Image 1: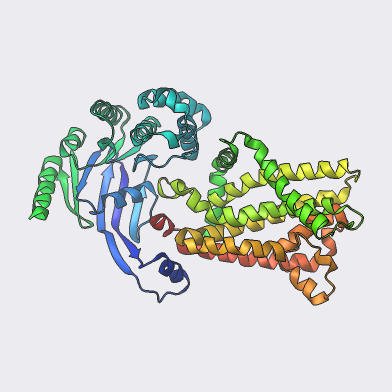
Image 2: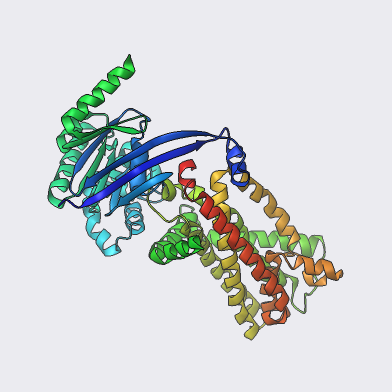
Length: 246
Length: 268
């Protein structure tokens, strides 16, 4: 049970900011071109065990999304090491990550195939995904005709139903109406309990986080300023917000 | 070197996804239009008609080329150019087109130019089959030289795949590069001997120089198979130069991949 699934060792992520895209192109050939550096994540270390549910709090720009993107394997750290074991299913910006020309159903297959799931396995999951997303006849329409709520529902439905080992939820529950939100919360609870899924949950709504998570991490300006009990984390986060208001 | 091994590993590991995505790319290009798949044939047919009209009616260049009608000479070289043309532009734009694979999920981005190229290759094979049927319909039987088409097809596929890897990485960083490529494609088309015969250039050094162009080598190679009946082994020097160019292209591709792989997801 105490197997570590995610380990961050002194991870730093620096973005290079150029004045224009032209400068960025020139930088490939000439090292002299000047740019500003922005540390999005600054010397962060932590580890998460299998089956843990961790909430990450922080104001906009604190580096939460960058951390999640690095766990997903989309972006790479500038310094430090990251180890991730298990199939990551990420709900980063739910409305994207689809091919707009394909129908909802085709996108289910495409996404499954990209993740390396067999067609026969996807066919088994398909029904659950379609039912959960409540898209009904829209499932066979191209995604470009979907509203953002519909895309979000489909995205959520795919990601929780493909049997993830590590589930990353980034602000996902802020879309959709109340009843769908409740359904999502229920589903997440179900998979954490039954399938021993590791959950990473990023949100600004602290009560939802307290429903699933025992551990909370608070980030501020690229650093982890608190890591521990969820209640204390919430308090710490609230004090940071108050501090910012003043 | 490490990059090359990684890229090959990615391709082996994701081989099924590459095939699926190539299929999806093809479906996406031609679906949604009333005529659908027919466009894959109509578009090139229309272009061929325009060039044929301009050259044989307008410029009265309607003479036989090595005993073959101008029309057959035209199609045997222009079909590979269509593939090259698409790869030059789509190959460069592919990371932008498949942005969601780069920034929204873990996916080996070196395979994106490959499946874009594969999808275009399917169109190319269909068009080439039509060309072969036309040759037979005109009463020109195919011989063993036609088998060499596979050789030139492979050369073209490999070269422009490597090109795609190089150019898509650069184009992901800057849109200027895509515009640059787009504006150079037309020039390349007219300079590469797709519509005129390189072999009839009377200045020997110029002819040799023009044959250094990989596009010319491939287009001329296709015509060697169907019109001139020349074996690829008869011009070993040309192939050696082509191999050198391929190696340079590969080095450039690996350089841009190593340099930009980690930066591309942050900027796209």
